[in-house]
Amino acid sequence: MNIVLFAPNSLKASLRTFTAAMMAALALTSCSKSEKNIPVEQIEIRPNSIEMFKDQSISVNITTLPENATNASDLQVTTGTPAVASYENGKVTGVSAGSTTLTAICGAVKQTATIKVYWTMSRNGTSRPIKQTSGFKYFMGSSQVDSYDVDFSDGSEHFRIWIPAKLLGKTIDISKPLPALTEDWDSCFLNYRSNDYQNDCTIFMQADSNPIIRNSDWDILPLNPSGTFSLNLIPSKGYVADIDIRLSNGHTWKLHYEGPIATEERGEKS
View 1 (cartoon, rainbow, N blue to C red):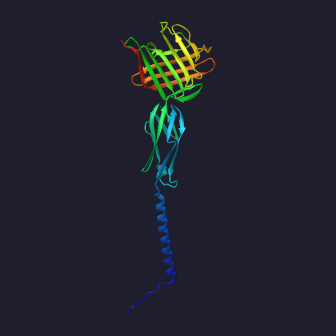
View 2 (tube, rainbow, N blue to C red):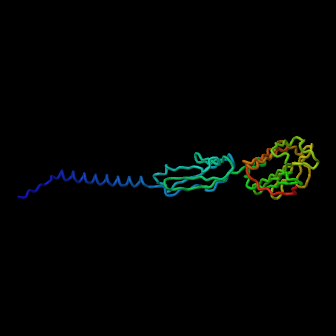
């Protein structure tokens, strides 16, 4: 004998409602899992080549793509050499002259930007990067260097220091005569010029005399200077140069540099 059971209509309706609810829950779970697994596929750093001065801060825009990536909060940003440049709160800050990188990583995606930090020189408060250096060592019939002549430039403007070797490592106060310059031909000078020699100005110092300022036409300028400059050669750093000068017309010259300078030898050695 066959027995056939019939479910009441109310039970059938309940089963249909339960099945629909389960399918909706599964669909919602599937969508939720899909949204949680949208990884970052690309990182953009702008600018991707950063040039700056020591102590200068520059804002950097770092973007992750796609915009709806669910792991974008995992983004990590660091600099390769914190002693050269640091990164914090969307800004890169120059710490010391040199080269390094800014690296952004999120998951398996990585992007880098280059950073170049320069020593600076300035005239009347406008800072410029020291991008080029050159120099000479002069010999006067001896195996010892007689004088040093070095040039610092951003490519269009120049500061130049010439000093006898006896003043290497000395801080020179240009408002005072220099007893160390004992010979008539002994001299040191500090020069500013542009590539077109506009605003050419040279401060000369000779034995026991007050400094003289001349322009490119060799006219004496009535600009009483004050301040100091120095040049040193330190094995662990290379050349170290400082200029901090004020002229009586309000113009200022400032420079700081530490690093190597390719120098040619001139004159005759014994």
